[in-house]
Each structure stands twice: as C-alpha cells, then as structure tokens.
Length: 287
Ligand SMILES: Nc1ncnc2c1ncn2[C@@H]1O[C@H](COP(=O)(O)OP(=O)(O)O)[C@@H](O)[C@H]1O
Ligand SMILES: N[C@@H](CCOP(=O)(O)O)C(=O)O
Image (cartoon, rainbow, N blue to C red):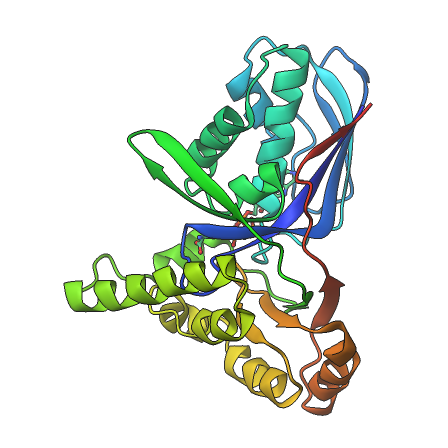
C-alpha cells in the first residue's frame, strides 16, 4: 500500500488559518511490512527514523494499537518552507491509523483530527479533501467548502533558508484593533466571494492586501516585495507568502511562466523555483 499525500499552500494572503489549496508536490509513504519495531526509511536530514517520526507519532495518537511497521518515505515537499510538509506527514499518519485500525473515519473526522494535531486547519483540509478549501472550526467541528480550482500555474519561489511555522507565528501580534480586524476580514470576505465567483482579477488584487500576517512576516522573507514587483512586470496574477513562508507563491497563466522565470534570473532572484498546479484529489491510497 502507498499513501500519496499532496503538499499545500495556505493563507492565500488574507485567508489566514482559513484558506488553503492542495498542490502538485507529493509525499509518498509505502508500507513495506509488519515489523518488530517502527522503522521509517527516508533520506530527509534530521527527521527521525523510529516511532518519534511525525507520521508514526500521528498514527499512534489516532490508533494506539497500531502494530509496528516498516515504512519507506519519499517526499518532494521541502521541509519548513511553507508548503505544508507537516500537514502532509500528519495526514499520512491519520491514513495509516485509519487503514490498520479499520477505524472507518470520514473525511470530516480526518480533518478534525488533523487540525487538532497541526493547530490550524488551512493546510490539513485541502491535503485531505483536495482542491481549494475555505474552512473554519466552530463549536468543536470543522466546516469547509470547496471553491472552484483556479485555472493558473503556480510558481513556488523557494528560498534556500527554511522558516519553521512556529517561528513565523511567533512574530505575529497577540491582538489587533477592532478597526484593523474589521478591515482585514472585509478583505478576506471579498476575496472568498471573488474566488467562488471566479473573478480572478479581483481575487488576485485582494490576495496582495493581507493585514493579518504578511506585514509582520515580510521581514523574515525580504525577497517578497522584489519577487512581487518582477511578477507584476511579467503579467502574473498575484503573489503571496505561502503558509508561514519562506516560499513565495505566484499565480500566473501558463503562457507567462517562462518570461517570469527569466525575469527572476535577470533580477538576481535565484532561489529554487517549482512550477506546480492545483491538486484536485487530496490524499490517495494506492493498493
Ligand atoms: N515527511 C515527514 N516526516 C516526518 N516529519 C516531517 C515530515 N515532513 C515534515 N515533518 C516535520 O514537520 C516540520 C516542518 O513543519 P512546519 O514548520 O510546520 O513547516 P511546513 O509544514 O511549512 O513545511 C519538519 O521540521 C518535521 O519536524
Ligand atoms: N496559517 C498558517 C499556515 C502555515 O502553513 P505552513 O505551510 O507554513 O505550515 C500560518 O500562516 O501560520
């Protein structure tokens, strides 16, 4: 059995902790055999190979009776770069528990469990459900609605430094004035409406008007403004800090991708770039 889990891009600017989209980069977990202890084969630096691995830890939290397994993990998702690697690992763990514990969890229950472990639902929901998801937790349950898939290529500009989500949450203010919060939520509401109406010109404009997190995190990702400027020159729709950063995500029509990539080069913006697409499936089990 192979569990194939997409990466995700969260926030989309003003949708802080609420909007996310699954993208075409994958974590694959292959179950090799039942074993006498947990063994996780992979080549990721500083990631545990035993029961302390996040995939195994999650599976044991959800189903403590899980027999020890020998797993092989392959992942294209950069760690701690704002592409939801921890949510993908958590979702793989939930699927392992569900399969071996025969728990019969619904998607809604999986999202609920994953969001509790991750601490915010915006990566977990699209990773499980696929596509572009808007959601929130109310009264201990998670409400989510899928929006139409945006017809854009996604260029991920991935700086060589990582940015753990915990650190990037640490620079956010504890409180906002009512006036700022009202303004921020009006921008987010209108963004959501425009995504559902498929008015991408409006959505693109609003995605660059976040007041909840980007103004505070900009200093951690100093390339953001420069990449945004080049993206505008090269006909991109929009740019935002993917999740907590350090990745900057650019939505752009296919026909403009090449020109944008050479524009980045010309301006000496030489981080790794990945050309991605929305993933509509979410997690998949391949038997
Ligand atoms: N495939 C994986 N296996 C085990 N742990 C993982 C895996 N992917 C991510 N993690 C854990 O999640 C951490 C990154 O989480 P986080 O800081 O939230 O960044 P992001 O989710 O944006 O990549 C890693 O440092 C590691 O501890
Ligand atoms: N809403 C969260 C999203 C974190 O995403 P990640 O991919 O960086 O884990 C936040 O902005 O803190």
